[in-house]
Image 1 (cartoon, rainbow, N blue to C red):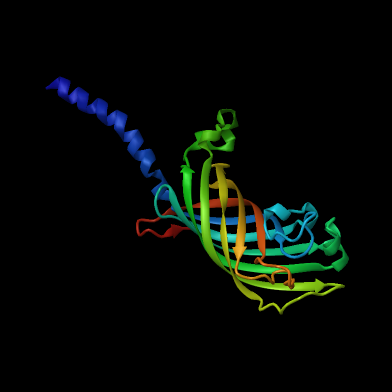
Image 2: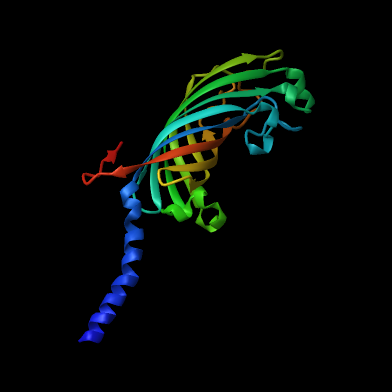
Length: 247
């Protein structure tokens, strides 16, 4: 009888910490997120030595401009989250950045203000860990395998307001200022302390418009994209018994 009790107690001591840790994520299902980063626009203007590619292949660091984001994240499951956010960005592109002669001769420059409200689905490849051991305060034990790594995909509304200057115009229409964007990319999170986490996201936005830069060249066959690099701080909020966040 005593052997059975001892075995039972041993199993309890072995299993209980794992169960407690497995359920810890449920105590912090909500996060408030704020970020600052950069935006790069891939449209008709600027870019590399060839024609406008409307993709990251046309990246030009001179066109990098600031971006801000604010949002809320909710954990549906330990590895699955939804994040609603609003992104503000001020993008730039110019033919003065390119060595391609036809594009350079066009002398087009645009500055575009974006507002992007949307939601994104996140799936963790490496789950988020809790406890002071997995924070920057314990940096000596930092391990890349403990960094919460996730892929994301989403859908957003897009309101854009370009300011355009161009010498030679081959435009084939006019902007409607409303479009849709489809974010996709990768993110990383690691805890600063029990309450706050630091994050990095890199994601491209595929859109349904060729007028984010205010221009659609008659030779263009693709919609505009833009790349967002975001550095963020998140605050974890405790979950009440009713399933609501405690501020």
